Length: 110
Image 1 (tube, one colour):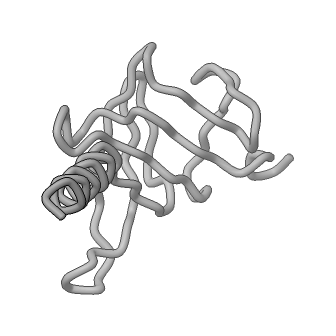
Image 2 (cartoon, helix red, strand yellow):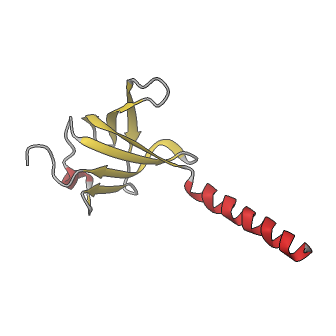
Image 3 (cartoon, helix red, strand yellow):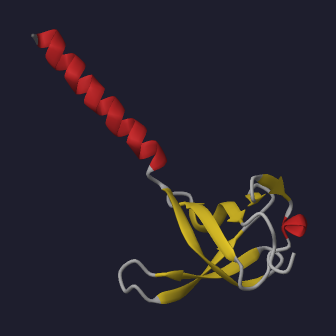
C-alpha cells in the first residue's frame, strides 16, 4: 500500500512538471500594423476587455519565422501591413521577444 501511495505521488508530480514545461509559451494572433528591422507591431484582441490593442514584439536571428510550413528569413517573409500573424513568446524569458512568427503561406497581393 505504501508503495502504491508513493507511486501515485510521483505520477502526479511528473504530470505537473511536464505541464509546466509547456505552460510558459504564449501565442498572440492578430494583424500586422507595422514592421521594422527588428520588431513587428500587431493588433490583437485583449482577453479581458475584448477590445483591440496593439502589441510590439522584437525578433532576432534566433526567432523562427514560418511562411506557411516553410522556415524563411525575415527578408524572405516579406511581412506586410494588414496580414494575419501569430507571434509566440516565452512568458518567463522575455515577454516582448518572439520565439516563433507564423504567417500565411502567401503574402498579401501574391
